[in-house]
Length: 434
DNA sequence: CTTAATGATTCTGA
DNA sequence: TCAGAATCATTAAG
Image 1 (tube, chains in turn yellow, brown, cyan):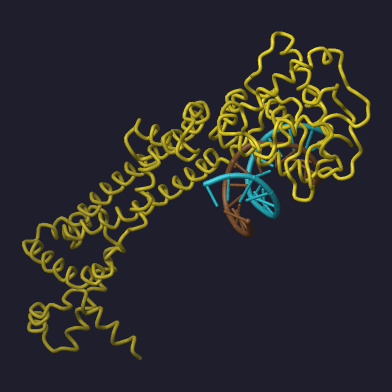
Image 2: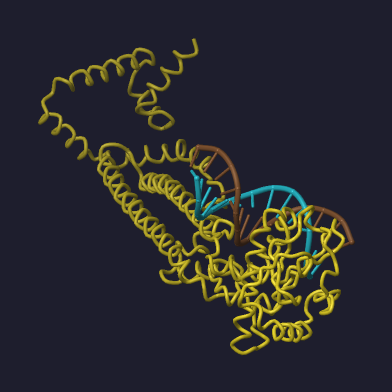
């Protein structure tokens, strides 16, 4: 029921809706209302029907005639005006785009990551970010690692730019195409410049939303890349054998107090040439932290290792001393023998015997001779360094079996397998058991 | 693919 | 603030 009238109305509107002047005019000339209208509609239909019968030339001719009609521009103007007042104003109202905070964020991020920024600056900014992310200090080791990162980043950057360009080009092409089309059509139907403009705006919005997607996925890619390369955890590399050896040597030869001082850590880091990943210092700290805790947690498991390193250390010491003595070989050797343990909670005390309580000695042939000098050396070193536990004095260290043994730490193990040659310190000792 | 080893990070208590 | 403990995440070995 409702349909009918509305339809009718819209029909009537084809030519004159909303334009009082015109419809009045028509009405005036049209004679009696009902009949006149019906007649008009009939005419229109008739014309439409005849169009299909017309040849192309005929149609063109008519079109041309219409275009040339002197009333045409005026009519189009009026129609455009009407259109603008109705359709455009409605659409315009709802087109207030939301503030694109999102886009801003993306832009900022891309800029910060060096994807959308100036060409070279991007790379260095990323490198800086990388350096910062990995802890800063070391500096030197970053380049090799980050070149890969930078390469990938610039790859992303390149893709981003080409895509962006592509979109832009497509957008422009499409826009001009649409504009031409509309201009063309504006000859046959009422299209105001404003409308064209609006259309262009719509197109741009569409394309910019595509662009935003591009930006978003680029951001994601960068984030992934970042997390992959810069997250220290992911970057973990195992130390090489040599480095592990050096650290272990130190650890086991300072078993009584495996807390290297800052300098010692630095020294160790240098010796190990820890370059990968992170700040050397903290890497060493981490290593010792992990080592302590893991050693303590499962001494049995480390026994063999301990013995091995102890032996090694002893050998080293001997060699050194035989060469000439020197007390301080900077890093580990000294103290070759300390035996001890760092306190463990459950154990009461530390120190494994320096010498095996009984027996079996491991004395390598080499070891024997220089022991005395080692002792001296060690004493010297120890007193100098004084670093470790306050509780530990040289005498304690040397004291033979003083302490011990009972296993404070290692539960239950039996006495040593490796033992040192006589005098305490130099000895290899190592804890025992197994 | 599973698992052990291990470097790094995070949380917690002194 | 630091060491220890717990946990994460990756690597390497099987």
